[in-house]
Length: 466
Ligand SMILES: [Zn+2]
Ligand SMILES: [Zn+2]
Image (cartoon, rainbow, N blue to C red; front, side, top):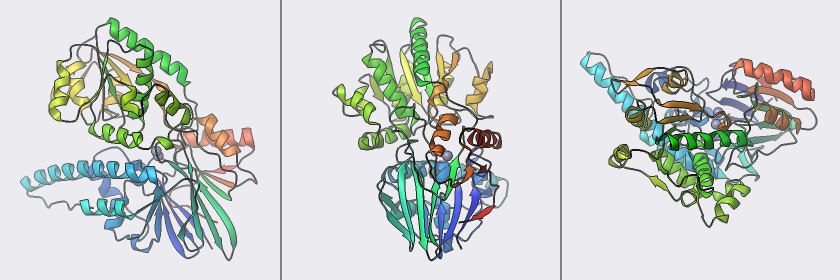
């Protein structure tokens, strides 16, 4: 008997994790962490519902931490097998896990310093740098659309999910004495309107489908409208003799912004502007994208190459990439005409907070929000219209103009999810994962109405037979 258990991203968006027991093997599908809040407290609450030593292998859909972040802890807990992923995920995983580890060790050290002074017991680290290195060394990168054996009688194939570089739809085929069964996991499906990523692939055959439902209840704004809005903001900021600050996620969003700014440059809209990429992680990821052009959208690569450029950096000649802290601080001297892209995407950390401190109180400046801002983050507080915010123990007046550009989501909207689901033949069993309950319920209704598909919404720890 084969069994699949839902161990995360069940009626929630983060913590993607599923356990497949088939043909005598235990295979973990994603090993994601929950996101938000304090890194040290959060990690302490994450537990595994299985013994990591009993797993034969891990299969990773993509490198985002809500799908991969607990891998170092899995190795710390005794797992010692292969991690199957795509080539792109392998490269991004190193950058993402090392960055997360740096934040974790820094916060843990600070916590322990306070505890020492208070005479309290030290909190132990739940994983080490060595565990991160073991994750990377255990990766088995595989190309898309090629079969690989994950365990005896279990075959793996990745399809492009079009979400971030290396993102995959996972197909696992079990072929034991009970016959052939195919499990397809959507991973995170991309938004076909966004740049650089190819369109997600449609899969036709499956017995069981796990499908993400992040935006199961809505469609995104068309990209053309979003770009028109972006052009209007540029024109206004130029008239105001101001600057534009853009908090951006290092993976995906930053590269997409560089591409669109490159197009604006070619249109002659950036003649009086200087663009700064002030994000060491965003720069590292941009370089990975630049070395992986064969996995990027063909039309967008034609646009970049048609201009004689070979990568994103060349495509935007007035781009300055800053690495050192001194270079970052030097941006403060630019009086106007600076477009500053910096992390973090929700203004919860990173260099963007310094730029906000320096620029938020001037009304000729513009803050451009290009990603989802969850409740409680500084990004959300600004979007909600706060008149002043505290940055580095100082109150800063919010006089800058704040804009939200809604079209940049990296996730498929409802229409795309329905399109992906409709490609399957022979009516597989559908299970919705990776979404808030309201969004899942809306998608469940839409699947029934549009395609006659009955989808279940499993709960944490539920399991199904395959
Ligand atoms: Zn993702
Ligand atoms: Zn995700």
